[in-house]
Structure formats: structure tokens, C-alpha cells
Length: 170
Image (cartoon, rainbow, N blue to C red; front, side):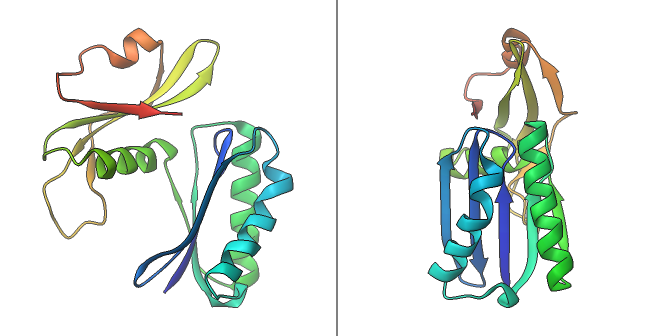
């Protein structure tokens, strides 16, 4: 199954194509606010790199926020258009949850370790999502939600994190 994944919720744009064997092609680059100029050419290039055509894509995944209003609008509308045109499923995922998954994978912490995903919310504030590394299970997720995603000051976002917690973001 070929899945196209899109994230344009921050100043970075990430696009990947995955198949049964894992990631076939991926690109992450800083685009600032130019997602509308760069997203479709990157999608086309990655499909070509993976040896796929648009009709080979069987599902589209996209981050649904929080993040930049314009970036989210570009990513969501592109993903929805591709899914509608191909008659394929579309799934949206929290930007903070996807970031927490990447942090957990990269850091490789033990089950129960807290993972704090942070994104710039502007005006000196951060979007924060708090997750815990899960024990191995049949779930595709490595983390479990530990509370609501919220907007906080930097001090509030990191307050109460125990030693050994993993924090990161854009």
C-alpha cells in the first residue's frame, strides 16, 4: 500500500511516500511561507523518485494542526484534493502527535518516558503536546496521549517535566 504523507504546518515542509517495506522517498525542507509554491512539485518529484504515479497512491495522510494557518490550509487542501481526485482515503493527524512520534523514535526512550512536543505559536507562546512512550503493542503509535494539546508560555510548557523527559520541536 503506497501512502503519501504531508506536513506543512510549520515553516518546514515534510513530504514522504511509504510502502509496505517502509519509507520509499522523503523530503524535509524549510520553505517559510511558500508551501503553496513548493508542495505539489515536491509531491510529484517524490512519487517519481519512488517509481510511483499518482494513481499508485492508495491513501493520503496529513497533519491537521496546530500550526501556521496558511501552511495548514495549503497542506489540508492539497491532501484533500489528491484524495478526492484519486478516490482514496484521507486521514488527518495532530502535528504535535506526529512530532512526538518522531522524538520518541529518535531518542529511543524507555516505556513511560514523557515526550513533550513543542511548536512556535507566536507571541512568545508554544503549542505543547504531552505524550508518554508506550509499551510495545499492536498499535501503530509509539506514544500515548497524556493530556490536551495547549498553548503555553515556554516556562509553563516545560514546567513539571521529570528528569529524562524528551522535549523538542521546531
